[in-house]
Amino acid sequence: MTKPTLAVALIVKNETKHLRACLETVQGWVDEIVIMDSGSTDDTPQIAAEFGAKFHVNTEWPGFGPQRRLAQSHVTSDFVFWLDADERVTPELKASILEATEKNRADTIYQFARLSWVFGRFIKHCGWYPDKVLRLYPTKLTQYDESLVHEKVQTNSAMQIETLKGDLIHYTYDDIHHYLVKSAGYAKAWAEQREKRGKRSSISQGILHAVACFVKMYIVKAGFLDGKQGFLLSLLSAHSTFVKYADLWVRTSTESPKE
Image (tube, rainbow, N blue to C red):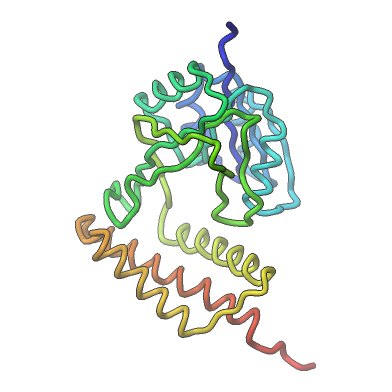
């Protein structure tokens, strides 16, 4: 029996800082590297070439879900394993992934824990760990949905979900500015998606959801055990929650200036 082949797939843009370190953790044990770039202006293409990646470009950004679907259309291997450039595969996770692909189960999707490094500390609480993500599956079995942001792998009752051993290390934010820029992009995409569905919002909704977010992360999910980083992350997450509801309110409930 032929050994199943394995591809790692990424969607990227301007990932010079992270891409090499990311790809080094999969070098030598995956059969194919597929990268879909959305218009990098740094050394991302050159770094991808160093690892023999199949590098594709789509500058007409369609949203995270559609971009991942486009990337998967270029995968030729039996299994696809999804990574982000700011993630690293641990040796234990590598062993689990190889063992899973060798079993070659046609109906199984694999998930594993993601451990995030935020502002100088691994976050073990705040509801962030174990942050189980579905990232490995037979290429022909499924794909990501069409969501513009917070996209998910499509599943149904006929599919099995199995948890692998080992952590995926996630270097989430470089600094506060990076956090704010990244969260603003997510908030914009979330508001656009909700607006297209005819949804509306209010400032009071934003406040309530923001407060609930902080209470859940810092108190219910024991973010206080993550020290100052836990407090900061909970507060920033509450702010981001408020912003996305406020964005939707501005889009759907305020008037444009009259010329």
